[in-house]
Image 1: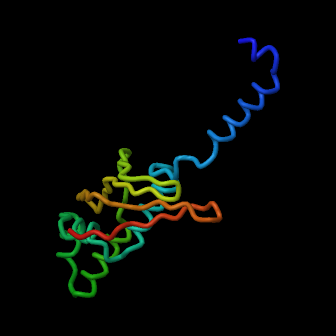
Image 2: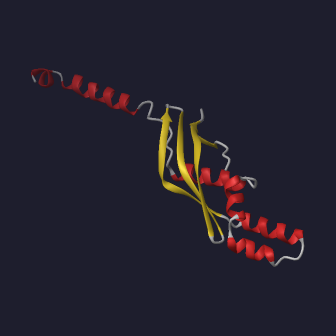
Image 3: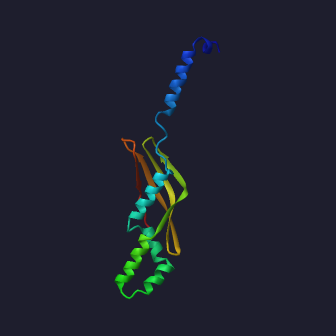
Length: 145
């Protein structure tokens, strides 16, 4: 206790160093931030051949009904493509952190897609990386049904 009274500058400088050290090298990128979640959804939605939306289109009664009234294969194909483009994707609120370093995190979440009257879901694995310039990069591991 006498040390604190005799050398207050030592105490203040020690606290400053501790605060500086505690803020260095954070815990790494976050899996559940809004930007990361939106990136995961956008990556999957932009893949026109993703198996999740293909499954939902094939199993949608509403899409099947529209396609059955089409006269030509080209019309059916257009209906299926419109259904894919109109699909609504959501990523579940619960994201599991599988591993983390200062530069990257690997994560898993449940992705849903709604096409007409059908909702399909699939676990999706993704990686969040902190680039050297401080930006965040997201990649999604391809999946099959």
